[in-house]
Amino acid sequence: MLRVVFDSNVFISALLFDGPPRVILKMARERKVVLIASKPILIETARKLRDKFKWPEHNVQKFLKQMNRLAKVVNPKDNLNVITEDESDNRILECALAGQANLIISGDKHLLKLKQFQNIPIERPKYLTYLIKE
Image (cartoon, rainbow, N blue to C red):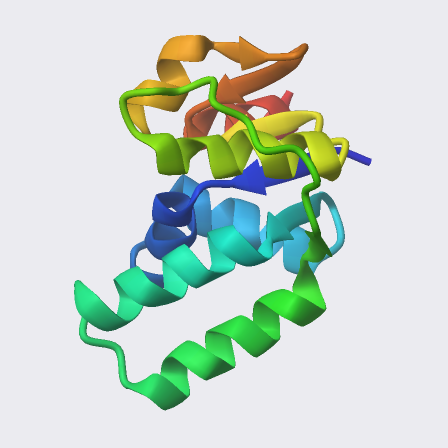
């Protein structure tokens, strides 16, 4: 089964908007893909939901509980410094390695610029929905 890592912005898009990120999250709920996450990614997502989108704390906690049940949460051991323009993007790469991901889903320009990392492709969300339709 395909093992997929979301960056925090893909999580947020899946929660707030219709489109490919939400479709992929639904696929994870249906156990069609394995969603891989890490504590740093979930913490960053929760922070953005609180600060930028003004989510109430009880909704943020509900999201975190759901993700802890839905996703395989890994504890990366590596501390990478591949992306220097935005150091926090390295958390996505660390999670992908620790979770033995097959695919990283992101809209982040720094991650997309890499195209792949250690043979793990980095693609936009619409890529996976297109791939599944094939």
